Image 1 (cartoon, rainbow, N blue to C red):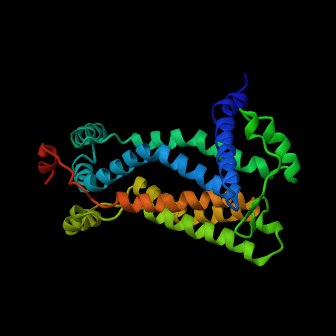
Image 2 (tube, rainbow, N blue to C red; image 1 turned 135 degrees about the horizontal axis):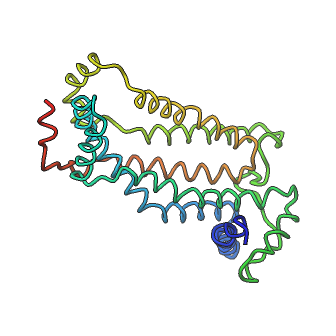
Image 3 (cartoon, helix red, strand yellow; image 1 turned 60 degrees about the vertical axis):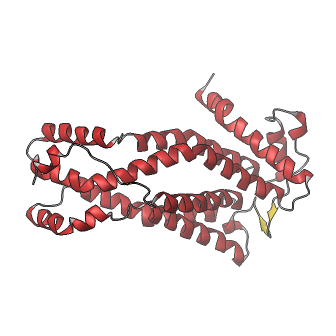
Length: 284
C-alpha cells in the first residue's frame, strides 16, 4: 500500500465521512447553508480534539516566558561554555516541569490532520462541476445513507465552490481580506506578552543588552515572528483569493477559535515555582 493510500485510509476518508455526516444532519433539519455549517462543525470538532495538546503547548509557552529572565542570566554566566550552559538550562527546565520539545510535538501531530482537512475541503470543489465532485465523493462513503444527490454550495449569499478571483463580484473580495485580517490577529495573539518578572528585571536586562551583542538565535526569532505576523497572513489571504470560499470558511473559523483560546490561555492562573534557585543566584 502506498503512502498516499495509507494517508487517505487513516485521515482523508474518515474526515470526509464526518463532514458528510454533519451535512446530512443539517440537511435533515432543513438548515439553510447545510454544507457551510458542516464545515464549521468539522472545524470545531478538530479544534476540540486538539484542545488538550493546545492547552499543554500554551502552558509550556507561558512557563518559558516566565523563565526567560533566569535563562538570560544563565546565558550570560556560561556564555563561554556551551556544554555547561545546556546542562544548567536542562536542570532549570526539569525543575520548572517544562518539556521544550512539547511544542514541536503539537505541530507534528497537527500536520497530517491539516493536510487531510485541506484535501477534504478542496475535494468537493476542485473538479469544476458539482456533479463531478458528487461522483467522486460518493465512491468514498462508509455508509450508503451518506451518499450525496447533490451539494448545495450556497452559504449566506456566497458560493463555497467559487474562488473570489473567479467570481466577478466585488463582495467576494471581502473573503480574502477578512481571512488575512483574522490570520494577522491569530499570529499577534500567539506572541508572548511581557511577564511581571521581565518588567521588574528590565533595568538589569538592559545592562546585559548594552554589554553584549544580540545573538543569532534572537535575530532569527525576531525574523520568524515578523514572518508569522505579517507575511503569513498575506500568504493565507492570497490563497483564499485563489481557492474556493469553502476553504476560507474553515481558515476563518479556525482562526477565531485560536484567537479566543490564545487570549484565554494568556490569563495567568498560577506562578511558576522554582524551588532550587542556586544556579540562578550564583549568576548574580
